[in-house]
Amino acid sequence: GAVVSQHPSWVICKSGTSVKIECRSLDFQATTMFWYRQFPKQSLMLMATSNEGSKATYEQGVEKDKFLINHASLTLSTLTVTSAHPEDSSFYICSAREGSEEKLFFGSGTQLSVL
Amino acid sequence: AQSVTQLDSHVSVSEGTPVLLRCNYSSSYSPSLFWYVQHPNKGLQLLLKYTSAATLVKGINGFEAEFKKSETSFHLTKPSAHMSDAAEYFCVVSDRENNFNKFYFGSGTKLNVKP
Image (cartoon, rainbow over all chains, first blue to last red):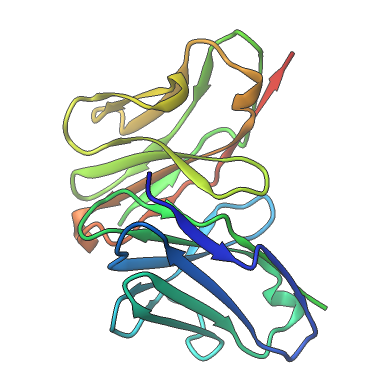
């Protein structure tokens, strides 16, 4: 089946620094990628949707300037958490889909801890 | 508007007994419905999906779910639980209002399987 690779799997950083998370589709072209955030014991909350070559669409309440999303190619999307603060600590998960397929393929997630 | 309600945050069963994880949805259009499983420290894996074909959907690992429009439900079942089924399960809905571009997650049900 389709594979989505996400890394790093965990990262610890100091407050005020920026962190980049990569999401790659390994064996298919991901026309659309989604970024989710999951707090402990809660469900996944959609942060933004990105289509290759265009600007990401952010969900209400998600700061565009803080969570920078780039989807420069059909196999790679990146999420950069800029000037991270402790409240940004969370589990971030990307997912990708090929064309108009309704099925999503998920990365294994990134646990971000901001000190 | 779309939403998903998973009625039980935790379900505990004994190995070899049936599993029932409940999911109710609301959607203004004919929905597509999914069940995903998340094992600890791993990404989400698709168990099964319903996309307006047969109402009884069979998935991987012996799971199945039945779409009941009159009850707006999509409960997940398995005849006999296995220890390896212990994980968190998410019910997900999407529909054509957003061109199937948005996937709404339920709050999740943590399944515990006792030996």
